[in-house]
Image (cartoon, rainbow, N blue to C red; front, side, top):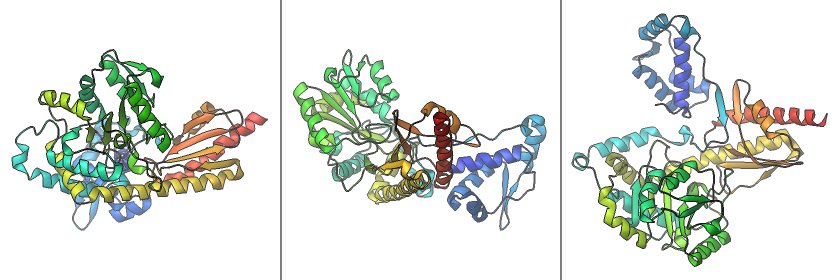
Length: 442
């Protein structure tokens, strides 16, 4: 199933609809990859991936030294569907500044594909289900990685690999005997995590003092990307230990923190009372579902007794590919590439907001390039703004942090919005808010 947030899928859908509507007839030559790249503001790799998908589905025919042409199959589809296909409507475009997705331009699929192909050549490793805890080589690489980047205290034996955080939580809950226990979530919007704990008989509380388990994300404390201060981390670890509370540290987005202000993981502060959870989804792609948790010794002993009851949920080829990807320094290079792109987006967005709003806005410095936060020096109904921004050819979604009587605090997640749409989006936001402000004051 195609992920609509990927640019090459959007380009695929764009040309598919033109073909199905009859606007591109059989035999029509599409722009060259280079020309299409220039017209759409996309990389040549992205365009090539879209063209290849169209070829795979039979809509295009590649001709050597000539280009890509609309196939006869497309003509048949149009004729068979009659008037219905002519009425096919293109999906409405969206700039989603509330999304925590990724930008496909930040990841080189060709390089990852080569590592997957290399992993598939290890035929002797592919003949069984693999280690329930995860392949030892990958666990060793992860242990080295988190020691260096997050100051974690662990070895490969403390790490459990799984396909996504929810999978790991389903393994963890029986180990910490969650039935009838209360759990506090620092982010009450994490519905998937809350659902897992509820399914294991937990009660969810909105007060940390009453909880047996504290589920916190120090590197992503809110929808606007706030980070827990170092002093607060020390206090949390100390208080939890005194109160006999277990901490589950979901270190989501930690890789994108401001490196000029190093923030140690909670696990590095107390490895005996913190379960550390990390994932590679934001650095790579959401579809590459490889997550891991570091267990304290008291919980690890319980896991050792039951681990054979759980099959490993991450495929061996994916594990072998990621192991070598990290070993070759590709993960570090990938992170630098992503941070560079996201920093470019956040700088552009900040500059545009200041340019179009002038002295009516102030930008709040954020500790991560993934988010931009600003304060408007006037207030309007955010629900009305949401409705206005949802109209038009391209809708825009943004985060409301605080709606006051005189000020409005907004936040923007830049990760999944293509760079070329930012200027236009800011102009629309400006027009929307000024129009609402004018009506409000009239």
